[in-house]
Image (tube, rainbow, N blue to C red; front, side, top):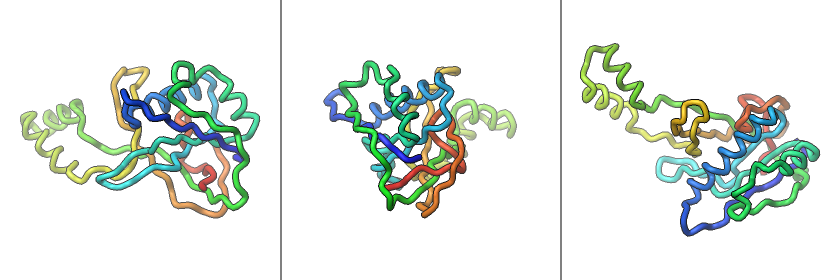
Length: 189
């Protein structure tokens, strides 16, 4: 991970930044999947956490080797979004950069199938099951998320993203098709 490239959303009067980031990240995921790439990581340098403000921001940073990023960005995965995204140059990572793990976090949020299953398991009606799920989910998840559509199930879901604590030394490893990892770090600056 010696280079990076920033992709910044341009302001658009028709679409809010979270919606555009979801579309951009969905395209990134499909491209990483189609290319079976496991050497490109992501971070969201402008993300905000907290119950009131939890957004990935308007900048997506791709991390990797110069050659990998050059080949990846040359692919047509940004077709149809180029006017909405400002693509920076591939630049070397600053020498004083820290490193952090950027991972997916999953939470039980009580979707309809979970509520129905809970109601059957505990022999209660749907209204009671929904009320119980509402009570357990009152504290909102303070992590930024990207709203995506599943290619297989066609359902929308929230991909919660956690940036770990910055550390001085990098940890190498592989990234999934979302550009996330449970152990490998990306430069953080």
